[in-house]
Length: 323
Image (cartoon, rainbow, N blue to C red; front, side):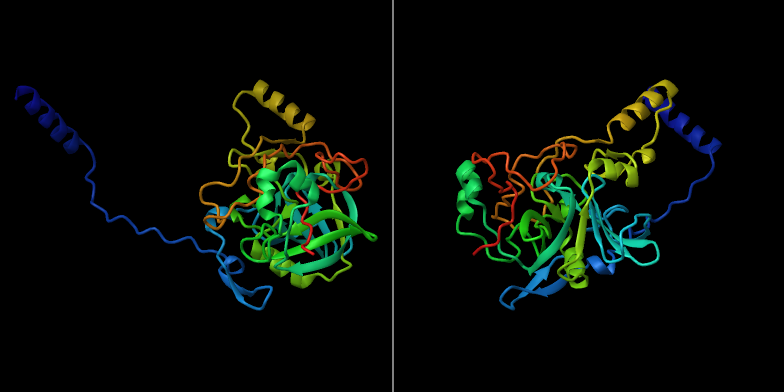
């Protein structure tokens, strides 16, 4: 009892010495406003049926993957699409030294092509099927999709697809929507270049077939965007934006490491728990093993590392339309 009385007296004494405090009512937290362009919308499906597209969650939107008009210092003509798989952005070049910048997710096929191509075909709610080589090498994963998938929200290409060709040759490089909006801005397990469904729908409406696309190499990315560094959440940011350490010696070492390795990346896990993949459906892209986004780039056409026939071109993440 004596000890309890002592603590009570001490507490009262401290209260008497300190400033009086008023009881305040906590302010109700305001909901985060989602930009109009990323709100829910209803689109027309492949057979004319309405398809609801959910709003992009605010947690998936940040400065680098939210669509915005930015200054652009490239030399490409207005109307050109520029894909930077290392900075994980796509530019639609505009007049007056500006470009509309979109965030993208990059699968391993997104790092196997660089250079110039042309959008020779566009498809709304495209169908998809695995290649024969995909079925042969990974039947446990792709066998369930052997008959192809019709267009719709269960399709890994999402709402739209843009198909890149060099002349009459299909590069198997695709710019497309996604089942998983949480992946945008990250190095995903597979696929080529994914965009939010809302973004790829709007871009699809703006560009005609015949549009030139330039896919940057890693060296071109560093020259135009500067070195990038991956955050713990899996996004990339300019290396200069990373807070330096207080130790000058350590800071200098880190700067040298960034300069020698344009982008530091880690193997990325599959889609997080809050993924928007429909319940009960296995996304064949998310099920694949991720690879570091700094994988060396091989020029010319996409090649399939699992192919056994020399000269056979069929990338693992190809989006071959059902026939």
